[in-house]
Image 1 (cartoon, rainbow, N blue to C red):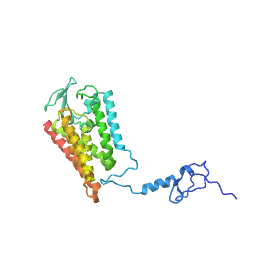
Image 2: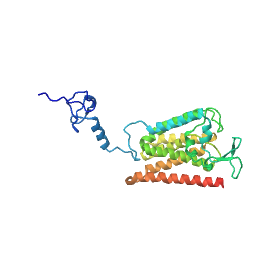
Image 3: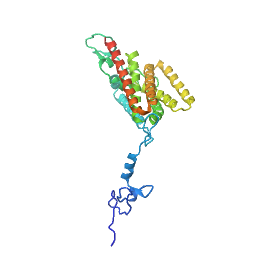
Image 4: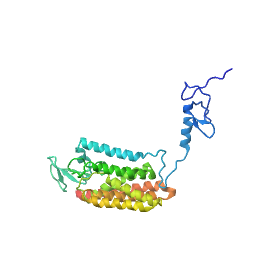
Amino acid sequence: MEAAATTCYRHPSYETYVSCVRCERFICPDCMREAAVGHHCVECVKEGQRSIRRTRTVFGGTVPRSAVPFVTYVLMGLNILAYLGEVIRPGILDRFAMLGAGLDGPDGAHYLYRAGEFPGFDVVGVAGGEWYRLLTGAFLHLPPTGSALGALPFGVLHIVFNMYALWNLGRVVEEQLGRARYLALYLLAALGGSVLVHLIAPFDATVGASGAIFGLGAAFYVINLRLGRDMRPVNRFMTGFLLWMVISAGFASWQGHLGGLVTGGIVTLAYAYAPANRRTAFQAAACVVLLAVLVLLVVLKTSALTG
């Protein structure tokens, strides 16, 4: 008698006599995966990959299966989408830019903030309860044309330069830190830049991802230092980076740059030198403590502004 015809478990129309050596299900050539002995089916290969412990970097980040810097792509996409939103609706800048304290008059104009009661005037900015500005301002950029915030002489190149820096620094830092740690670093650096703006220049409206990018620059330095790499090219890079911060102080928010740089350095130092036996807990705790300190500084400054 002839043996009963067998078909692939995923493609019933395909007749086959080869089975997976693990689960013994019949598989067609499209579903076969080479193994040390025989073939495995697709599901057994996936199950085997899940059971393999992923390699981690010195900083605790999981080495991704794909080399694609996913978080960096997402952050760049958010910045670009926000910029397109600004171009379509310029009012987004006034509504979401980083601003410590300001006054909106009954005529719709913006005025310098002063503590006290002013009938018909509304307090705006962080002092007015708009805490979201501490982060949203880091995803906005100066428009190609003039606005209430002014504009750099090169207009649209503001976002071009920032996205170029994010691409070059972000993919290196993300590879070493892993996605979760990298995202936490980026957001904390962005927040740190806004907090220093709030402390020193609360009446200035600022936008830009520069604070977060300067935080990535600090992370890049600490990462190379921790890995014991040749620091000469890194030192040259950081010298140029810091020189740009000094030069750009004439037309950009040096407070945001410095705040992001310091915050990014602190976070990455906590990542790099966390105790190996409780690395993740230490790193998470360091981020939470730093976040609490930043929030406390905002509360104290806001209280001082509002009297």
